[in-house]
Length: 298
Image: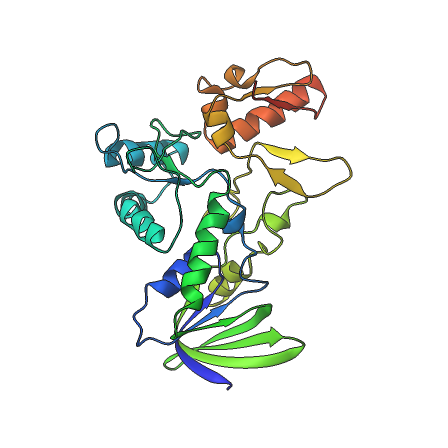
């Protein structure tokens, strides 16, 4: 064994980085990243973070309801309530790590509207919120003496043993072995399973697979959310995400004939939840026989 830690965190998106920062200085932590720290789905996020910071025009109950409606009430209620009620404090804490959320003249955070939300509650940093958050968290993590970082390292084996876990890592063609009392899997989703995705190249479901092999119950694995708007260059598999905040500010979807169509499938139109808008685009493509669509921001 190369070294033993109190905690090993696999994955260095916003979840993994923020988790590392929440452990006290006396807890030894190893952060493992499959690629460079800066490459994650979190860093690609543009629009912002949904949280209730304006209690005059918004409240927890509204945010919880919006979340349940968007999830067609398949959500785990306790998880939704925890996320909504604890989220604002976490956003303020993230701001303390140097993340410069856009602000109004009075110093309060600017808030925009995104699909599925009934109130303006999306705080943001320009159009690169994810990068701003991960850059701030990475800088904070690198300043922690109790946190070691292993980049470009692939977890290929994980076993539960007496007193914790035993992990095998491939780094520069060599195997490294680590033990830990606790292991956090913050590895994101499985977007790269599909031919077309706006996900980062690292979103291959490794962590979900390891969790399953160790006995975790996996729910709703087939319910993958596809972002409805991305810039699709011909002959290029990569899809450049276009934030739904653009639609929140008034952009509309047009079909190949230059006609609006979103309201034909849902009364909320372009501001329906992502899965609803994505489904509308797919159905409109079948109706028109064309895969060409436009996002009009004029």
